[in-house]
Image 1: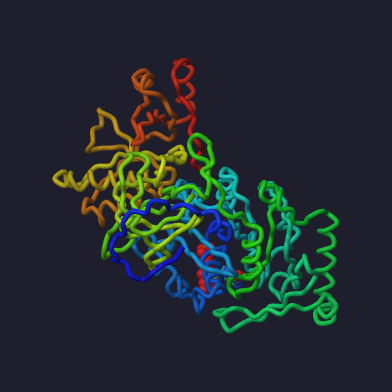
Image 2: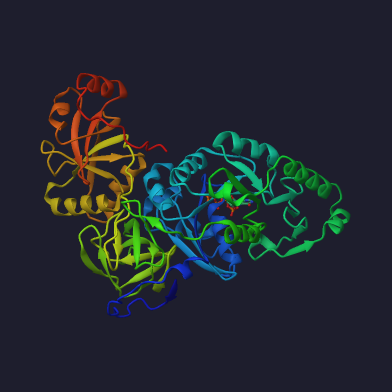
Length: 542
Ligand code: G4P
């Protein structure tokens, strides 16, 4: 991806080709970091950016002072809770490669969103706090990665602080998620006394040196084993013993097993001190897969060298309080994107001029001139685009629709002031298109009182807040007694709807959902109507 800082350059005439993405795709690595809140995701992102010279000092993107406000102060709810709902992508160049780091939402209530973001990457970095081990959110996110077939690289973070025994952490990873850890580096010094790592490939000691406050790149020195034994004494001997133990146990990296989701390469790090960051970057460059041909709805892989195509995995508005614009995030799947290019919106067949395309990270935006497979671009004011859409040039291609998760919370939404119906409708439409919440409708309830269906309760808070601040339409939300949804058909809807304590509504994508107070009720209705369709939906709780 190449960028310029000008944002108002005129649109270029449509380019005919947009072909030739394969050679540019090879050096690209597109990944996301998955972790439980507080494991150090933001700190690691900064450390990576610092290492790649995107930043001159850690904290400039979203460091301590600015973290809660700089990245995502576009919504009060994020600021109040210190969580990040907005997805962003950071791109940097490192050792002849282009690295795209796509940010994931920080809270489990936004699992649908996370699922979509993870559909845009080729690899995941699982960040584990050395003292806490695998935490609930890490486990949930890992399951999403498995669902997407993403290879996972593990970082054991905060090794500068007292923590658990590394082999014990590995047992936990293997037992709880079934991934076999194959460490690439091994710590020298127990957790809390992080001196450096043993590079398991070369056998050398990589010594780290602290810098003041960890705000600049930590100097590294590669020391041959014999010298390390003299300098580090018992700490080095222990590391070597453990490394040999692992080798005897077959815990060595195997690329095929890694890509097949059987093993996970592991590096040890302290994101805060910038220790182990270059090892992580090398691992990404050497082991993480480059973008590959993505299968379309028919299952035919779209060659990287084909004409331009991209998948919209996130739509977001209101990121910039001053402009209230709407950004559609697209992952380039094939070909070359050029600013000003006229692309086709696969769902409608209509042309769309990509006049303004941006790279977005935190509050930083730069205009994108060209982008290649694996890159993430933010298309500005892309009103027609919704989550899961495909855009392309040349012959029509459509990537599979994004799965919607089973909602578990249901509320009727009404405008506080009935006179603001126009704003109400606009808001509902927008939030539905962004996939902030699922919107269900029925003739009985009417358009003024749609039912909102959520996977996590916090989604309602986001809706309430945005309806008020963005659409000037304060709303009331009234929780319904339902807790479970099953998919039914237009044909069966009237029969199911006639059962007591059951309601059938239609979602924006046309799917009919039958809502039940509990599983018992759903099973009983299914038994009484054996010929009716009542299918389970993908589990929202991941
Ligand atoms: P998150 O994005 O995953 O939620 O985590 P974040 O980076 O915000 O880090 C959470 C806390 O953990 C921060 O502490 C951060 O400094 C600390 N941290 C992250 N990585 C490391 C590490 O490798 N070693 C140590 N010792 N700490 C780490 P905080 O108290 O919220 O802020 P601060 O005062 O430390 O800046």
